[in-house]
Image (cartoon, rainbow, N blue to C red; front, top):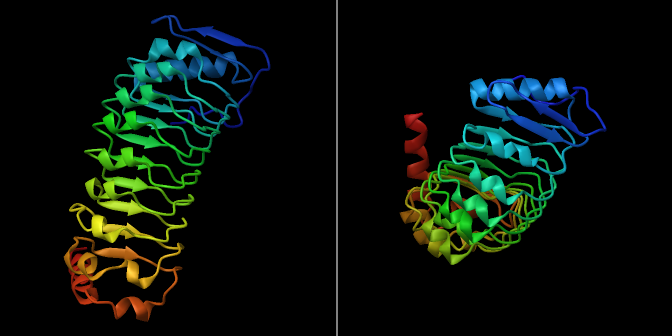
Length: 269
């Protein structure tokens, strides 16, 4: 969009700007200069998009509440934000929220009231849990929680009714909860974790799941049970970098049925 803060002038003083037409104001400490902020606000009024990337922010300014009802896309990635204010829940029309590359360790319960949110990017933070209230994100289609510190897949994500893509790669996840059977995703990325169990007896019930990525984990060939390979709808399993070889996987009971689904999907492409 051309309105991020990278390589733009900044000020060490507190900056306060008021835009004329709607009286919007923004205050950022150690952030962008007044002229840069003014441009952000003017752009947001027209585009409903506010980008404050790479500004060195440690908090979201309270003045953002003044634009909470008009924003559709808020991007505050590549900052130093450690916590989110409770007023984050007041962005009632927000469809995309980008929080990647910050220092977040937890999220407020109020995140769960963002009923129109479709894309949530929490990658590259320090999260090890999510509030149960996130199950209330009834429009969420894409969730990225990669490169955090999760040791288990948060149960709340299993109850997101519209979730299509879940990226939980590059964490410390060792197992999948039984609630994984409720996942509605078509693609589940668990690459580069510490999985020592696939919980395939529950994963087989994910009717929408088509792509499963579990590369670079600690899985054995026996984790891919016959019922999962034969009867699931998964047509692509990326499994390189586990505790077995390709030939071991290809000799598993149910592999032929899986291969038939894989081939049929490739033909449609």
